[in-house]
Length: 404
Image 1 (cartoon, helix red, strand yellow):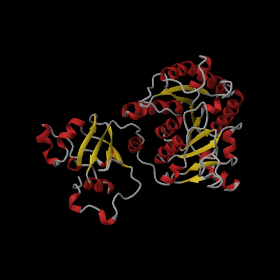
Image 2 (spheres, helix red, strand yellow):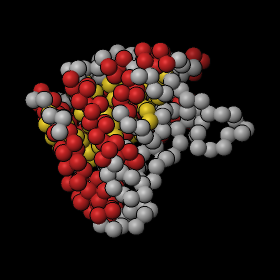
Image 3 (cartoon, helix red, strand yellow):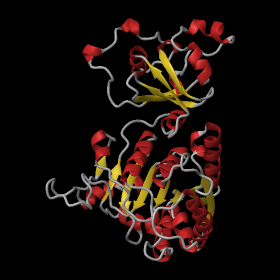
Image 4 (tube, helix red, strand yellow):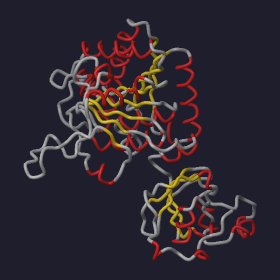
């Protein structure tokens, strides 16, 4: 791609009304000394000021708390235990927030610190509260600086990287553009750090329009010594962003004024949304990282869901896990593959009692009149990339549950 083409593509950033910028630990914190890269941070603040002067709203998702805190606590290099990571985050978050405040306020910006956990984006009520708070801060002219609340997050229930958190923030506030500043300049056809004499020199992809299995196969492990993300988490972030109709850029932040360099046509990878954004409700459902349970469906129900129908009790063969009415669950094909996510109208206990039965029997079985659908089509997002049935194996029409 030529410089002119890259500049044209970068208009996704220059013309965006609302921009989320994710800053990685390896950029903010020197890997050798564990100190903040203040000179680099000052140039990024200049970039942010330029966006704001154009009338753009900016949110920052910043890593670095753990990296800063571990130096202050004199912890050795290497992987930290959970309690060490939490302690480092508690110490480092103060320093990180102060650095952002000190730097951005010199440019006349009001800074707001926002700490989120995965529950704040997974649980519907907390998600709506987070969205309201962030929108209010932007309306008042503040720059939210967001990080995962690592002090209280557990190993089992956490993002663990800020790439997916940044994508969730972009989806939450309906951002037009997400920029992941990283220590690599984009997505390559193969790992550029590995000798590739047999496969040839890896090539940088300038544009990606869809997250396919081939794109996922190009992702590798974490690159830096202080961060937890890698290309795998960036591809996961791209899937969330594209589902929300948000353009996403992976670019190198190693040089000063990284956003200006993107606008000037710096080499990078743009993920370009093609489809219309899902509704806000379906965006939230699709981006749920930890569904509370699962419903296994038969072939007839699977065919009905692929045709945008609701999931009826008759098509459910098994309820997995513990979940309540209104929780987001996975919908699994007979082979166990996740094909959809949706908000279930029944608890796991009630779902187990009515599965395989007709909707007209629900009141007799449960003793109350619930919804006819286990998951209504308005509360369901189909995730499978392709038609689940080749023509010769498609279930007969009479096997599919009737449409509500």
